[in-house]
Length: 90
Image (cartoon, rainbow, N blue to C red; front, top):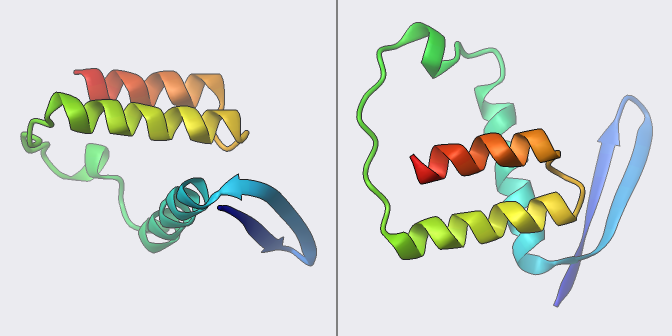
């Protein structure tokens, strides 16, 4: 199944068409999270880091696959993809 993402910003409208439903969902969740965290201090600069839960290899692979889909859709740049991959593989 395919979905469509419509973005409205400063009176402009842009559409991403023929994206898989999974990709549309991931994109929407990412944008919502960014909007919710807007104006909040970054965790890396204001609070001490806490150990993160170790992911299973299956979870890591699933996250890497999602990142690759976002890259292929033009949502992530090569640099952003590399940064996120490094975080997952730590």
